[in-house]
Amino acid sequence: MKVIVIGAGVGGLVAAELFGKAGNEVIVFEKGGKDGWTYDWHDDVSRDIFAELGITIPKSEYFIKESWTFVTPDEKTELYVETPEETRDYSIERRGLAHILAERAQKVADIRFGTGAEALIIENDKVKGVIAGGEKHYADLVIDNSGVHSPFRASLPASYGVEREPDRNEVFYAYRGFHKRAEGSPDPRYTNKVYLKHLGEEGISWCILDPSGLVNILVGRIGSLPEATFRNAYQKLKESNPIIGDEVVRGGGVYAIPVRHPAMRFGGDGYALIGDSAFMTIPMMGSGIANSMLAASLLAEAVAKSGKADAETIWNYQVAYYKRVGAKHTGGDVMKRWMLTAKPEELDFLIGKGVINKNDMQSGSTGNDIALSFSAIMDKVKRAFPRIPLLLTLKGAVDNSKKAKKVASQIPENYDSDAIKAWENKVLAFFKK
Ligand SMILES: Cc1cc2nc3c(=O)[nH]c(=O)nc-3n(C[C@H](O)[C@H](O)[C@H](O)COP(=O)(O)OP(=O)(O)OC[C@H]3O[C@@H](n4cnc5c(N)ncnc54)[C@H](O)[C@@H]3O)c2cc1C
Image: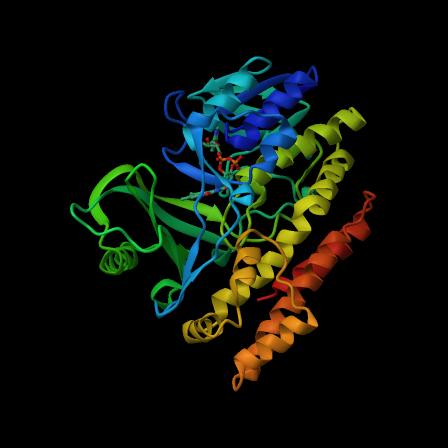
């Protein structure tokens, strides 16, 4: 089989290796150059994915991430969520990871750096390949790993049923930079601070004292990050964190991240989405590296099993992804939307009084369910008194999130277009505007 991968992101590279190893002819088109096609910073990734895919990361490329401290919008509560070291994510150098994955893929695939895919070749309403470097390249399967704003989705025939663009409130725009530490600044009490609804705005900011001695800053907002919003948030973040200096050493741009449930359709005949192009992040935090790598392996498995790259096989891949993590993140998206609509003072109250506690924050940020057992509810009722209506809205959101997860996990296992449409409508009902 001939396979084309658009984009040498983490998922694209894992897919290239797995499809190449399975005996397919694989070409990867990556628009960026070989020396700097990926971000210059490190990211937190669940370590399980490396064990699962048999990828060894040398010690020089990662360290074990510190636990988060969540800060309420009024900055009066700092909730340190201590996580045992053995379950904490790896903080991995993105360039190191990309080079490791590219080296592995290059043994079995042809990676063409500096060559962007320009368009899909569509004939008789089916994807047949891509145009790249001004030439037509035909393939049995095109894997789209080109990111959240993939331009290729919009050119698909309507029969594929793939969404063109995410909604405005489903994309997070974040400034990320590693700054020099301000000279003579005192050590902070907590090294990894995330500001929830920072300044009451829709999004988060963080300030992390990196083991390298640099200060890792993020200011992210839903829908857009206007310059004035960034400047104001940056200034306020500096006032609360005197360690932040102005000299940028790594990163320093604004980048887009999908923060929503996975796509409702992962593709069709001869075409599959993986990673950010299929919105595969943990909605609450925007972490997508592990999911993208997992998706690549599930896609390779589905195609190896059927020996085809038809719509039914791509559906089987989607079913496998939803069963593993997609349904969970659909539930997580419900909670994320609740957090966004909650008033800042409601979060101040709920977190300040311990109604939302360390376990809840740990679960939400890693994409897991918030558990509300009877005893947990009784404890929350005590803490939330006299604001029981607010507790009820939180409970309503948690219940709704569980329902969304359940409905999403009931994805039809057979490729039946009526059943698929019905499932899609049921899931989307949770996200009606
Ligand atoms: C500021 C920030 C912080 C983040 N922190 C974390 C974190 O801590 N942990 C985590 O798990 N995730 C994090 N993420 C999210 C993570 O970066 C993404 O989820 C992940 O990179 C998605 O990988 P992917 O496989 O979809 O490919 P991507 O990494 O999105 O790569 C897509 C590739 O496609 C290429 N491309 C695009 N268009 C074309 C084209 N037309 N032709 C050829 N090539 C093309 C691009 O150059 C790029 O190399 C963060 C993202 C940002 C922006």
